[in-house]
Amino acid sequence: MARLIIRLERPDAGNIYYKGDDINSFSAAQLKSYRGNVQMIFQDPYSSLNPRKSAVSIIREPLTIRKIGDKNERDEMVMQLMAKVGLSKEQANRYPHEFSGGQRQRIGIARALVLKPELIIADEPVSALDVSIQAQILNLLKELKHDFGLTYLFISHDLNVIRNMSDRIAVMYLGKIVELAANRDIYSTPMHPYTRMLLSAVPSGDPKNKNRTLSIKGEARNEGEKGCNFQNRCSYKIDICAQEEPPLKRYDQQRFCACHRGGSI
Image (cartoon, rainbow, N blue to C red; front, side, top):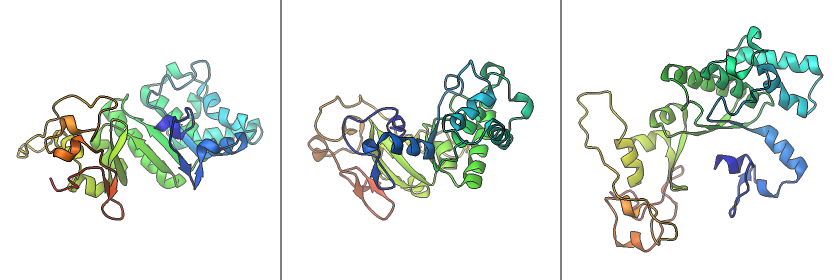
């Protein structure tokens, strides 16, 4: 999904709208402008950086490609941004292999910010990092969101990270959204069986919490099978689940769910 939104790949079907315009119909000039407004932080902070370029060159490259400022102005912008993400001037000419994982991710974040985008797609940005470093990067992302007025599309399998970072949450199963709601609603009153099972599987730090874990059993649905995507693994399925795929139905202003039982489980 992230690669489609950033236009690294083109969809076989469907539409992706940005400010009311379908990005798949963009001309080369429109696409160039769009890519300045929408940037990406990749999951692996090492493989996403060019090993033959220094940190300052990596961060400066988008400015050079777009001919923004002269070399001195670009270098000044890069140094200010490096300081903002917690990197020093002394580290500017080092290469990716000379940095730690957390520092490499900071370079990736600075590169994503250098064109002053409106939307940043963060694809599992802390999953490859140690837990102590994860907290530093997450706090940095929240600080940058406030300072730069950013919107994040934050992709993660870690429900505690999602809870800390997101205002609205979309839960996906086999490539389709099964529930979309505000953060507080997802964690307090999940509607879809898959969401409930995911939340049930999160370890609790409270030894008195003895909630029964709702385990996911069975195999994923085969391609082309009729009915609900989740039917083979759902403890709450009813007859219609095997016949019709449930639509993503609106239940209130911010809440959507794709389940025939409609939150009545």
